[in-house]
Length: 224
Image (tube, rainbow, N blue to C red; front, side, top):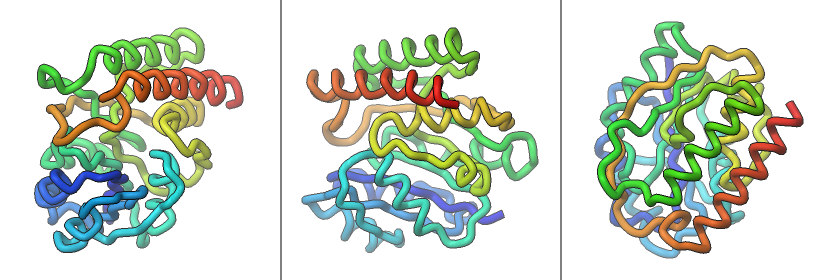
């Protein structure tokens, strides 16, 4: 089965080479780095390290992911991975193998163990609140909204993803749960990112992300 890796990036020049280098090359078919408005050397470094680089000028995590999906070259499994080196790409087998073996359609990496300081307190609180509400309100059993995830390509297309920002992960998980997919959570290491977070690294960014995640939860939970 062919595996494509999609990495949305915004100014990750310090980390992107490490991320790409640690991806198991015998496992993946292609690595797609989506430049979501970088003003540094991220795109050039990614290309030099063997990734296919595509541009998405419209800012937003979901926008970058959707652009990456559109450029996939006949793959069976899509892996989403952050470009800040907080996720450990060497653990990609853990997410992909259950899909290859027919055990799961969608695998989420839950951030356990989480290195001290890897997640800001506001991010930890927001993550716990969102997963709690998903369980209580929509009977969707998740313990994390981790960005490191793998899904069958055909199932991903069937979800008809719409969110162009931070609600992307919530939308995918709620739609996957409602569709009857076989979903598996597996523990993955999570460490301090390289560089400064564009979301939880600032108070305003955390508030905006939190509001977006909660509104997305109700929007997609009620509509499906």
